[in-house]
Amino acid sequence: MDIKEIKTALKNARECIREKQFKDALKHCKTVLAQDKNNYNALVFVGVAADGMEQFDQAEKAYKRATEAAPDQVLAWQGLCGFYEKHGGHEQDLVNVYQKLQELYKGDEEKKNDVLRKLADLDMKIGETSLAIPIYENLVKEEKNEDKKEKYMYKLEDILRNEKSLSEEWKKLYLSTCDSLFELDPVQFIDTMSVVKFYVRCLLQMLYVGSKLEFKCKTLQLKFPNISYPTEILVVMAMDKHIGEKFPVLHPSMDNYISTISKLTPDSSYLLAGQGYVQLCNKKFIEARDCLSRATDQLPKIPCIQYYHGLTLKHLHDFSGAERSCKMCLKTLERKDRVMTIPGSITSTVMVLQAEMLYEIGTDTSLQSALEIIQQISDDVPTNLLKGQIYLKLNDLDNCEKCIHGESPEMIALSGCLLYHKNNYEDAVV
Image 1 (cartoon, rainbow, N blue to C red):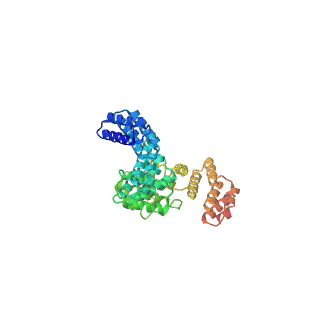
Image 2 (image 1 turned 90 degrees about the vertical axis):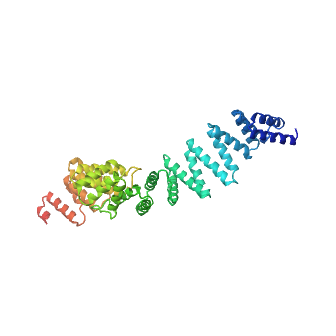
């Protein structure tokens, strides 16, 4: 069989396939393969014809033989790809085919990106999301068609948001992807509320604080005025900002925040927290307690709500309840999934309040506990004063005296009480 006859047989096979005469096509191909067992086109045509005759094993073998005969020729890989896509159950084989095709399509950006998209979607289907994410990230970077680029960004956002656990790198990727999507007009999320919530939670997990977080939340307020979550976080920010002050200060925007949330989400737990904080600032302690108590139960990951609940109970002279709230707040500050408050000096502030409450309870056990807590905190005037008061109540006059430094009114009062306990009544009066 000369070259001309081989070409004729292959032409006839192609024509038979076009007419769906698969049996005749196979005959022509077998004639060629009898002469040249690795003839590339004949093997590809056998794959097509055998598939058409539902001889699936033969079809797969023919395509594979063709890829082995000429691994850098694209036709057999395309045929094998179509075969696996059509019949299913060959996911891992299909992964390998997609990877080969994207190499062969390097000169054709559109085809390469289409195969990469299919590869990423298949990776997700078989539970290999970690492989799909960098593929979509790369597609977003390289795609020049704006419409396709947007589709890839939406897909990347969806994959990342639905992933069970995101690394720091992937959280950054999620934030940057959303920042790009938020600039679109219109934004076309299927579930905008879920996107906004997840975005803000990523900001919190990445420890965005202060003006940067405030700017992000206010930007989201303007972009999505019907979603309350950014405003809810602004409420927590306003509360968090004043932890440690002698008495909390009402943030100038708090009333607007509360008004916005009450219109959008009247049953919001954050609304309760904000209302409780406002009542505390206005010294309406009973109303504050009722709101903050419910908010504490509903938002157990937010330390500042627990702190203000404890502070409210202190002013209502419920010292045991206040101490419990402080203990809860300290535990929450240790949680990795806490919201907003960053441990540090705030931890010391809560510990001081807890020690104060144990001091007010006044039993030997509570005083010893208060002393243990206060000894963990760096010495300053307030902690020395409290430590001195605790020692005095425990009748440990020597240690009480060691705590007296400076001439603040509180220190002078403590010094007077110490002198009184030493029966030095004249100096105590002075």
